[in-house]
Amino acid sequence: MMDRNTIKDTGVLEQYLLGELSEKDSREVAKILKEDSELQAYFRKMEDDMEQMAFENAISPPTPIKSNLLNAIKTNKTNEETVFPLLQKKKVSYRFAIAASLAALFLCTSGWLYNEWKNTEATIVTLQKETTDLQDRLVTVEDDLKETDKWYRAINNPKVVQLVLKGNQKSPSSSAVAYVNHQNKEVILNPQGLSRLDNSKTYQMWADVDGEMIDMGVIAQDQEMITMKYIENAASLNITIEPAGGNDHPTVEQLISNVYL
Image 1 (cartoon, rainbow, N blue to C red):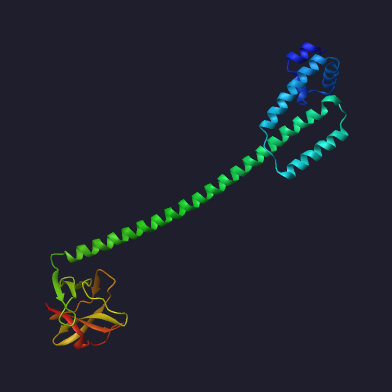
Image 2 (cartoon, rainbow, N blue to C red; image 1 turned 90 degrees about the vertical axis):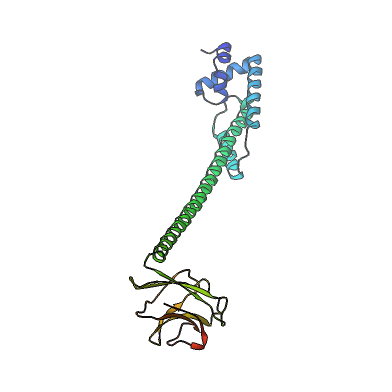
């Protein structure tokens, strides 16, 4: 059997306010409250304090959720038997505030988590792309280093003869360097000193063997080092200006440089 002090000191009022008591206990508490004006005033103050705290911390829920909650409350009011009519309105308001706050908090938290997930996903994609780009650049750098090391070893071989081909009066500012290894039968050319030509023309290299000019290959100006054909018994190396794509015989009047072996 509950009495005034039991209700006030054991937390029964809080349970009653939150709807956590059984139907029997709720009726008993409602009866005591109705008969005890001082206890009823205490209960109303506690209810007001909790209601104010709920609304101060409430987050407005989206309209659809609010509508659903209100409809549910209206339906519940119609179907349920009222325990304490004098307190029903505030109890419903308090419960609605709590429910609305929790619903809105859930939605806000879900939205925040979704945005964080999308941001993290975008960050991961960006990092993966940057990692791929970095790996590609590292591969390129590694290939360049291998290429540079190959050329360095080739031109610094003790068996290599270095020959400078200076431009004549037709192209006085031009120059190229040939590295000839007769033992390995290799010719490497550095064409970076040759003057730039328009797209309709190209440089071509020739070897003079017993007065006959033999093609050693077209010179690509966009490369630092080029492997040219090695020609046996060449007396000299010669560079001419030819039509784009090269020629099957040298244009002698367009000879811009030569050097004897």
